[in-house]
Image (cartoon, rainbow over all chains, first blue to last red; front, side, top):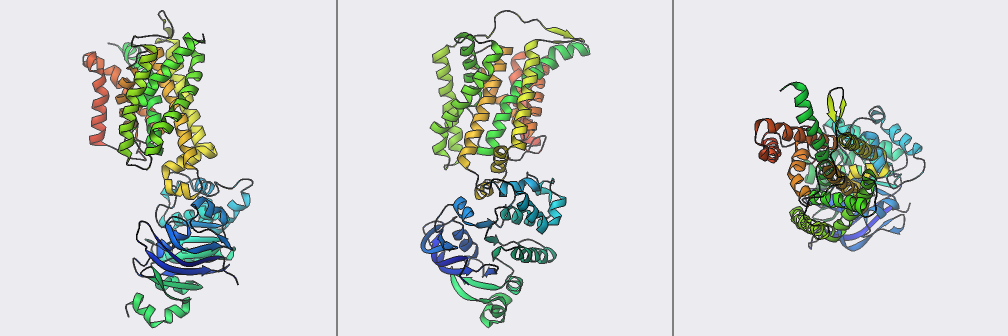
Length: 235
Length: 290
């Protein structure tokens, strides 16, 4: 299957120094792909590079064959990639429903089916549509953040550490939500700090270190790899 | 002093003054919430609005109240123009640079007013307005119009912010600018709308100050401190807070005259500002921005 999202030999950084020293990865339709690696490996940076939040100096990023390298975020959104930042990913002073409305800001016409899909995925949110998003629990906020991103009907959803700061119970819930999102036809690429759990539930994974690819394979393969295990699981 | 006397001579004038401050404070709080800086030219843009209304009355021969919408529209576009000319290219610089630039704009706008209209006091209508008696409360027509217009304008603004697509985009930009940009909101359009609204509100506050007192080139500058005190008192970033803060500062200034020589009236706003910053810097209704 040809990849939906394809990132080849991407180099770049925020200032003059390159944080990414040539990262390649791809996501096929219907896949959940995890990026893991030690702190400072460039995991989140790789994600930001896809979303045009970073100066990309080399390599190429395509979505469905369309070149999106270095494009502005609003154009990348229109190409079918939505991004959920790790922190500050909701509008706290707006209601749950308004958060979803902002997610659909670029869309016009009837949005009923988009709302139905998001509320179908997150019944918790349906009950709390008039609640200010800032008053929700951590797990529910993450649902709002993902729901907002799903309103544009993306082909690929990028999640930057969706389980950061959440209790193990919520972590499992978020992973389940990711599977549900995948099942409605959206591919997912996520950066995860909890490498072991993330690899266990993802279809494939990439291990980054020092801004470059170190290992790649299916979740199970990576978990079985001795070097990867030493890196994350303390030997 | 009996209660009716307190009401008629201090509370009612305080509410009128407070409504004028409220219109300014709402603008200050909007600039703070969306653009994240203290706008020091706010008072002088109000002066400009007041004098544009004066020009509409004297040059075009419009009735006084018909001059208000004219002044609001012209001042709204003047505010957008000021933003484009002086603030826009400072957007990426530290905020304090824009604050200082706004002080320069304040001096400049005031000088323009002085060059065109002179430094003498003017008024929209000549003659003395008599108060009507409403069950013991004495109110002049213009005082009723001032209070009702403030309420009407603030409600219209709230409705715009809560119900319309671009109103929501403005709230989103205030709430989480990065996420608003990721959602595809055009920052330039939000800034444009903000100045349009703020300019209109400035003109209204200047107009009503001129209507209830007189027009002077320093009128707006002298309102700046009470307007900031009102915005901070109510909680920066909160429209309803700015209204509440404006009314409290207005009434406090008028009531202070009972205890203090009237020369110290302006110091009341300063005292409130100082007290709030020391005791509860987030304001009465917890501010969103500070």
